Image 1 (tube, rainbow, N blue to C red):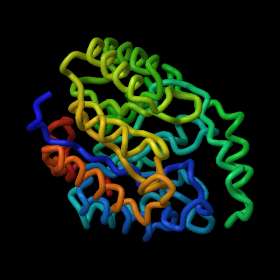
Image 2: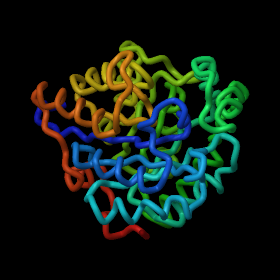
Image 3: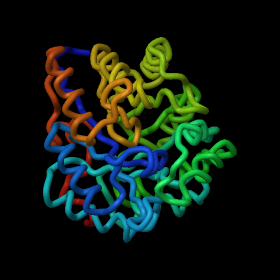
Length: 311
């Protein structure tokens, strides 16, 4: 990859793992999600990866109405690409998980490329006083979660969101096998180039957040997809900035945000999503890279355009 390549920064604003007790900065009310997203875009994020929360207690929500409370605000205030998660809940059907995107028809959606154990239960032992009653049980019960993403599920997302809405995907690959799953789908014409792969490292149940693993994932993707893909890296927790920096030096794009890590530096909580975006933005520029604007990212990823959404 040329050093002149523009870098796409994705910001994952709130997610479905962290809970309000863990950080005062984690947004869960619509106005706070909108503000955090807009400020992240102003700090340099071209893509905003979005989940919704119940505004009353911060629990994870797949209710399209909760999304519609902040999507138009972000859309009107920024040119950033809005990317709606099709994950969100580990216990509901793929139809429920697609409902927000089906209603909003965004430019992008995330799509997990395989079923997996997906757990964050060790986090529960770090806290004793909880802001809301649901939080502790939600976290502890993740020890028994299987995040379902079968080939049938993936094909349904590809047909309904990709085919009917012309949505492109952030293909989240939590392990090497997910790359082969994606390759199978591409060979069967479910997805077309350019493919955007998000290497996800450091989630319990997936591949570890180690540089050797990132290099192996990248080498495998090169073999499977050649030049027909763009790639990015998500490092969970304290691995966020180190792995993102390594990705920059390897010619990749990066993802940061409070969904993936609550930290600004080791042992220091971030005060906002924009703070994390600003940090990786500065690092990229110090390394000699330019940051892609939303329109440049749209061109790189072959997106349908901001005017083609339903919000």
